[in-house]
Image 1 (cartoon, one colour):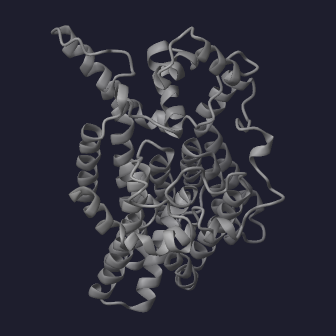
Image 2 (cartoon, one colour):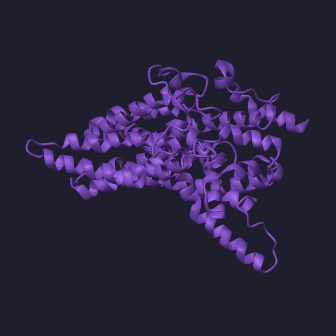
Image 3 (cartoon, helix red, strand yellow):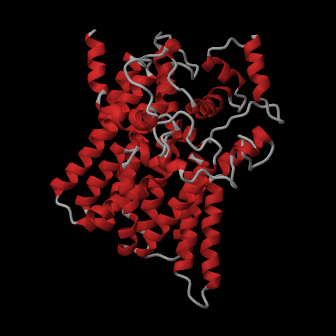
Amino acid sequence: MAAIGCLFVMAYAAALVGLAKPGGRIVMGDALGHYVHLRSAVFDRDLQFRNDYARLYGIEEGSEAERALAADRTTSTGHTRNLMPVGPAILWAPGFLLVAAGVWLIDLFGAGYPLDGFAPAFQAVAGFSGIAAATAGTWLGYLTAARLFGARASIWATLAIWLSSSALYYSVISPAYSHAASMLAVGAFWFIWIRSLDRQDAPRYALVGATIGVAALMRWQDAVLLLVPALDVAWHWRPGRTLASAARLAACGAAAAVAFVPQMAVWTVLYGRPFTVPQGSGFMKWHDPALWAVLVSDNHGLISWTPVIALALAGLVPLVRRVPLVGTAAIAAVVVSWYVNAAVWDWWGGEAFGARRFLSCYPVFILGTAALFDRARLRTAAMAVVTLVFVAYTGLLLLQYQTFMHGLRQVAPYPRGVVDLWLVRFRTPFDLLAWWLR
């Protein structure tokens, strides 16, 4: 996995050079919201993002366009709103500060590199940190599965999910999005929780709660993981132990809240209250979730875009049979995440490669696939073939998707509809080669 992570680093670095965007812009889309948290805190020592957005969008400060942008995003506290969580910025901070120190040092010798937090070296930290986080999260997912099903089934299950799901895209193409950070945080949660199942004490629940709070910093929806320790407590409840059970839940909740304090502090500054939904009250449609569409729609459906997840979901049944508590908790986490993701007004996740919001269930998908491989008693060669088939199938879709997204729309159509989503991917390499030869 470390070798794959290194390959991703080299591929990402090559893309930064070979596919450089005008103005040296690297951080794009949702990642921009995470990035301004970090840049503003380090260089401006505040959370006033107006100048950060203007610079990154290439808008001249003080211009009419900049004033219009600010007016549209100003909150009741006079700050510029930010829809993104602060967790990824915290994760990137060590690398960002290291780059700042390096730039300061080389500038002492006359290098003249901009020490402003906007230069490409600073922005690149987000991407490289994301690759490291995704790789580490994958490693934790493997270790968790190996504890239950052994190394052989677990390594192939991990590779299948990592390289055949949306995780691939957010590990190397867009690693600055919060999904890479979430892969690490939720991977740490499941690793710690499963490895400590034999302990039923308050310190263990506090540690588990802290990891949930950190996961929620990366993606707020990951707070649903609080269901897992709650289920753990209920599973081990015995008559006369109610007070001890309550103490464990209290320790878990308190630790989660403490870990989540940075986000509450940012929200208090930006919106005047410690809890909010920055996107507005209409962001969640709890009464009208798109439960079927979020799974199988051609508009970024979980299974329709990345069918390897069907294996993972099927594997939850043998997971329950093998380890009842873990399997039950895994199913509960997936079901609740399914409902939450389906209830978001843009359940398709905007412009995404597959159902990206389900990456919060990444370790569970690894567990499910490992359980299925183990239950089927597949030989190593058979697991390798299954993995390679799914990797190739998803890789072809990724090639088609990227070809379209880079403007070659006459070569590859967008993956929508039965033909363009399921079949065109097989033709895309030949069409791309013919275009290149022309």
